[in-house]
Length: 363
Image (cartoon, rainbow, N blue to C red):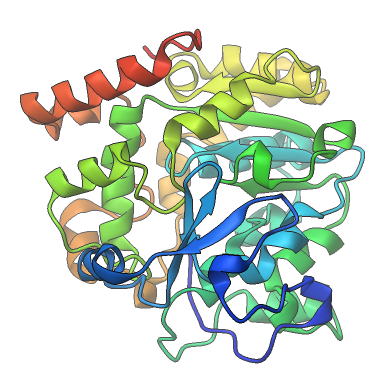
């Protein structure tokens, strides 16, 4: 999820921080109650997720799971002012988010592959709205974040304690393309009055395999447990961001809204040109056939992998050399190489229980 550092200093008024003596009494602008993880539950997580050692909270209702630092930024994220023309990319982690960021930004800004800003880091072109909670919520490794210099350039005079990524999102020039892993219930209830939301869904079997690699690779997670235990964390809603199905359900319930478009990772892999044309109709980019070909080629896994820059100081070198970096495989069906028959049955039963009545069908 990027590079990590620890922000210091007291909460500021601009963060609308609720001053409370006991975090368990804290409520957020979204109406959620904050419940800190404590005791053996917290100790067990910190043994397995060695990078997530600065506190973890659960939000109710919903069982959403976040670093404690989320509470510092939650209200600003909830009250974020969405503008006409914004596109919000919404996914559960490891469901094609980075791919979709590249696709939409280039469709809107670089269809002829001649925009000089194309080589800027992705977080500058398409910010990760709630990333401040991750930067603050992980251990300080002593190195300056790569976001610091662009933040100072985009937001002169702004205080980074008020959130680097959210302030960059606010000041990003139109048309804005912004990423989030948050569900609708933790975002502004007015988001669809102005913004279009593209939700990307992925087969949960592939999602958990990819997220497992991610949490082993990224030092701020530092996952040291077994793959079997990771799958159990997944189906018990105990991974960062919490319930896979509830995130999808909240989006699915809005699928008929004119400003919501749901895409499947698997469909994109099967027929990228066809999916780009449907996306083009939704976001109104009016691309030509040649431009569709440009986007498909520029955002192919091979092309993105060739351009990938690894922030090696924040990655587990052993995992990266053995199993790959942030962009690992970009395929469908890799779960067949990882899930044992027992784990496959466990995930299938969990899926059947949660997918009933939704109408969602993964290929």
